[in-house]
Image (tube, rainbow, N blue to C red; front, side, top):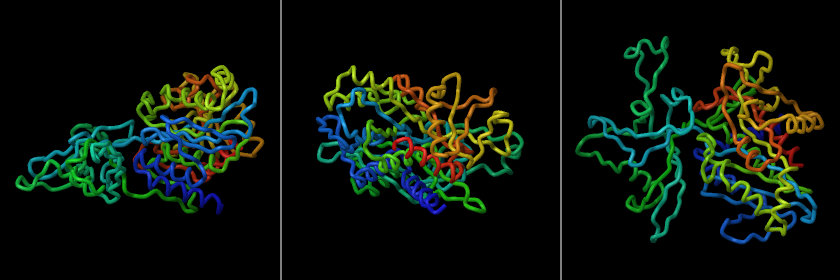
Length: 432
């Protein structure tokens, strides 16, 4: 239990310090560097060595970390990959997003990113984080920013003014009602650059040197364990920073063997993955093929390796909800703290098939790990993952696996401590 508590505390610390995908990637780079991994850059030649540990960071939001095998002269040099994603559903700030409302209050114009549970964002202390592009001596410099303190709130309408809300629910207009309040305004004092000036002060630059930004709101309340026996985790961004962090730590624990070991953390999963840093990007097969070419292998060697290699697509899943049992399959009820979940979908929203599943089940049996199987209720459509994107690009075996949680895509999600720890153990076993 002590090891589990230590892991959960470390995972929550990582998530608390990662209010955006850019912060998560920066933290991952720091962890990897401290563990002896060398950073590489795409526009440079790589000098890969046996048992070498390396990583690249693309556009500040996508991570590929890998350990080379002991021997490059293996006839069919396979690879193992754990893939996850660094982004989460949030409210993004639109460019020039300040709005002066009736000379009374200043609001921020936002756009919904991904599929958040919108009502969960109301009446929370919100802060802002992301990255800022700055003109530094006529060169573009990217700077991370995190206000850390609460600077905004989305106030609900009082029940006296919306008396049917508990019976009819809350219909939310994205353009009208998802506009956090950040300040009072008076005509003689209002400055449309009020947020830009605050950003400039926060990162120590002149406002006129800010070229652009990518910022999102987040809940300032840190993640924590809950329950009479601290059995559960309540936190923002469990989807999917819990899996990303676990995979990074598992790779840091791994030793070089007969295969290339890879961890990938992709951006933009929540909006379909079809971007330069998403799992559907052509960079994915190009990166892995480059690993083979850099050590003297051919494209044929790479293609042969793909047919024998294996990918874990690690993402969260839906657990059995005691207040909504009708949302769950009547047979396979994924209970919190009953073990990692293998995710099935015969419409191929998940990449799991019988061959890949069998390998994971065998691994769980060998290691005495608990595991569960997940299918959606036949009348409730589930989400998708990076699994089908990666498996279709590489043609390798892939299984979608993760941890069952409640309140997925809420501003705070809820899962079991034991599940997260066991999933971390499964990742370690997969690599070792």
